[in-house]
Image (cartoon, rainbow over all chains, first blue to last red; front, side, top):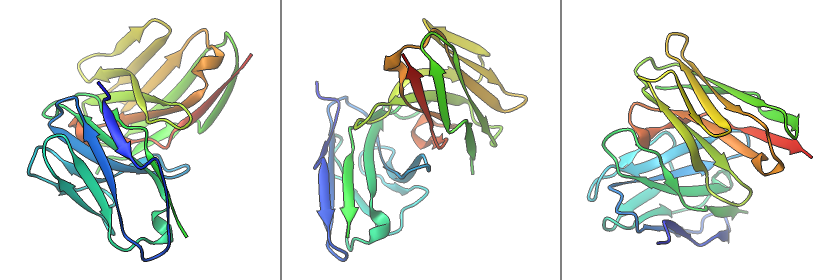
Length: 113
Length: 111
């Protein structure tokens, strides 16, 4: 039981390049989320998927797109990376529908030069 | 939307002392308040949570208190140990999946 798995762990991009961050969970969570973490700014919600087949914008969605491929997988895509997207990205899941804690992956550290 | 403020941003204590981290929130409709611990290179992990129908909750050396009238909640760690050193985040939500997080507190426990 791996929980929430993110790949890759590290990535360096040049400005303008694109990439997809992958996230998979084996906890049968209905809801999945992408957060970014910047120094001194806590965790900010980029996009979330309340259930398979649905996605919604969070607090900071500009420059990102997401795909809820199936119940297990939720990917985050940067179409044209910018230095402002240098951050640590966390995927999380929870059962949804009610107050339950988030289960986080171990993050992807992305640097855009 | 919800706004969560967390203090202090850094906290250093001697091993065996207590540590207290405080958070305030703005949305009176928020009803779920988790605390997460993040160790270096890892994702945040839930350590304790409290719901709005409860004023206090305790789990061994960790306790959380909630004052809904004043819209603040606090994390208390007693008998701190070096392994308690980490970054701690509070959060508030109406629905746990759309949590708003505080900016984090870096706790250092000196042996």
